[in-house]
Length: 333
Ligand SMILES: [Zn+2]
Image 1: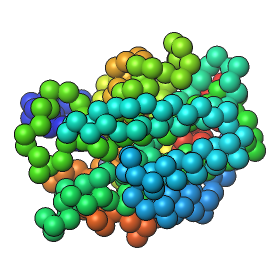
Image 2: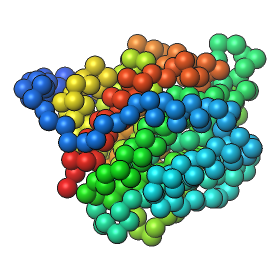
Image 3: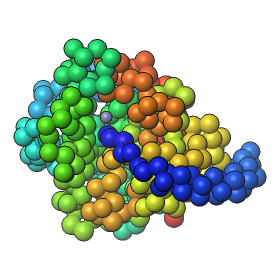
Image 4: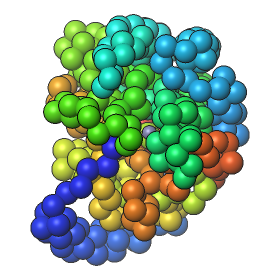
């Protein structure tokens, strides 16, 4: 994904608004911490960890590679194994450099007859370029994407397993989007960037949904949700276009005792898979994405480098994110 720079003026105005509102929210949330009664089943962080490790075990999951095909087959089989009705959406999409990518979105649905639905999504492809690596010789090599790719999928697979054991009231669609991370590399400055070369799978699906006129009450995107001591700030597109969903997520996390991960402050404005879904399907979507206000790029130090491997995956972080999302879907009526 890509972090956008927002004008300083806009940021400071937004910051003032958040600074004012965060005081009241914190007060309200304080009064509920400790007395909150969880309704969702226990999210198992060891399972989520294993599903991440399994994906990384395939190697680089870059579109058009045999590893990508093998991992896609694994994800389809897992969703079926967990009782989802699975639809595969295959298409050819064009990358920033003209490469034609064999894209494969994987959709697992539960309670298909239920009109009221929640959409959960993450990307499963990995970036073909370690273009942020400290060593320039690595810039054209692919990344393993343990956190950037596999982590969101691992959490969603564990949620799928839990849904099979106990059905929530609403219909749930889980989408593993492809070709999110094939965006223009930092070393290429000749590219026409008048269009968004990131998020090609979600761009395609949002214009060609797996069921006609697909609607959901709201959507939640998970991206880079596995790092040790990760912090999740309120991503700005989410906060503007899915204000209630953001409030629900951060409030629920706090009630569950995960306030150290879910920071009640505004983060960056990030082009990610939620943006096409908001734009083209008009579904309010919130992005739970790692954000570090102290790093120059906003993401972890290993982001888009050769170091995005299993060392950066932490079970407690997976638990905080997975349990929060599960609590939200099981509370919904
Ligand atoms: Zn990425």
